[in-house]
Length: 485
Picture 1 (spheres, helix red, strand yellow):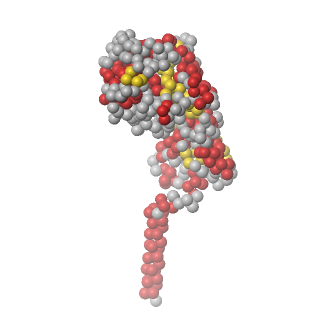
Picture 2: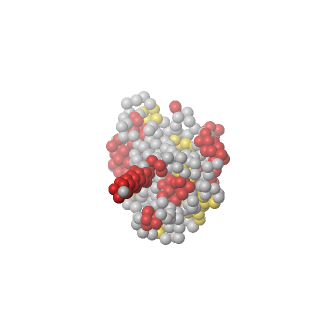
Picture 3: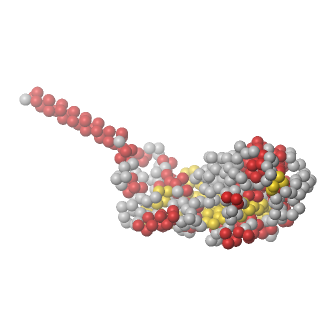
């Protein structure tokens, strides 16, 4: 009898061991498979069981959470959704997260280990931290000025603080209300389909995710390369540039809209945006030095994040001399995001130093205690300080004497560069109107803001598209908002 009991006990022990092994297999080995199974609702229910942390502009919360009383309990809300959508992105129960909502999702959702009071605390206790908050660098007045300045037109604005790289405004129009995507209802599904089917692409962040030919605003880079390379030494000496200029190795003749570009000085060519002068300058500088200067400004950088990714602005390094001439006036394969062109203007304003742009000032716990701060960012030299000083002088001339008069601000020093970028097959597309600029108040020791504006003109106003006419007034409004803050 005792022997049978021992056998039964041994068998039960084996069953217990088998049960424990299987439980460990399910909970450890197969856990990721179950977590990722679409039929498993537990992660989603847990994720939305508490309010999400907020995104702040200054002291104002531009996001919130609404208790729906459903299984996926808390739903994201947005204050001034279209105004801040290019910054916040959306947090949707059905379609995931984008932009800051995605880049800072761990902190906002409470999953970031940095929110725990002690290392591994949540793993041991099984608790979940309240979501933390993200405080942005955005200047509310500048953001609103940019959004209202663009109005109903397609385009984008990026503004940065030259001395730090803080992003002060990031606007893309047309925009959308991310709150309409927050839930998982039929309305959210219809909104998703409508936004994705809209030919104007309201969910595209044109300020950081779309690249445009920068047109004549790229002449800031070309001028920097020419001055650094010693191709130009005197701003007021004739450049020996023909008009028209025949691109090397071709019969293509480049012409100017402005008069007086033949043999114009660099100052005159910059103020009146002479294509012939700058195409020839680019060829004289050469591909290697032109590419080195462009890359020092940030072109061809695949790794720029603010903290979400910024599309790569490009300067082609494999061009022939004719193509180089076109690339040097912001055409051919030269492409830039508005944020990149704001960085170009900021480098001029900051004595030739480029500060990496950033959008998050600090992150904090729900109670307000600090998690992390942006801190100081290393800079790199885009051009020599003496070159930056001369470019500031040239950019001031554009506003005071040239094509950028609409950006002038009473009582402030403003520098700018206009651009009208051709695109499409045979330049058939309506040109893009560009303006890049910086501004310094009369009591400021250094420029406080650098701005880039691009406006996608409509076919109806093709003849009236110009950087000075369409884009410069928008830049002026943004600069006034920052200087007046």
